[in-house]
Amino acid sequence: MEIGDWLVHLGFAAVMGMAGQFGRAVIGLKKLSAENERSGLAPMAGFAPGHLVATLFIGALAGILAMLFLVDPATGIKASKELVVGLMAAGYAGTDFIEGALGKLLPGASATAAAADVPRLPPPADAETRVQSLDELMARHYASEPSYAPMGWAQQQPDAQTTGWR
Image (cartoon, rainbow, N blue to C red):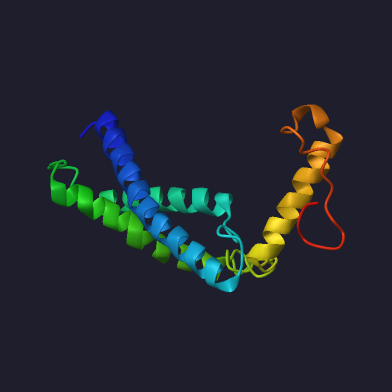
């Protein structure tokens, strides 16, 4: 095989490795969202876009390494569905292997340490409090901008004695 052939094949392997890792990332993001919802956190709290990009590149590296181990330069590459699925599986599974090896070499590079001090959302208010605060918000807004108020809205004031309008 010529150098151009190698570059095309390795580029294809990198894209397939990234695709496998992207599938893994989608599953991980869904789990993160569900776990954060149960914990009372914002759905994407703890998500690090930089970590996602780094793992996509690690998936590409895993695909390239798989291609190098699978290909015999004398015979070349025969495109098949098994090769594509194998490269995607290498990106999926190889990323764990490479991240684990890097974690042992660089102990402070853990992504879970960054998720420890994530701000929590306030507990949800009950329905009556939400409606009352929306009414108060609209009254304040239309009082400051009477030209945008619906007919008669800006003249109404919240009654301090009750939760309704006068």
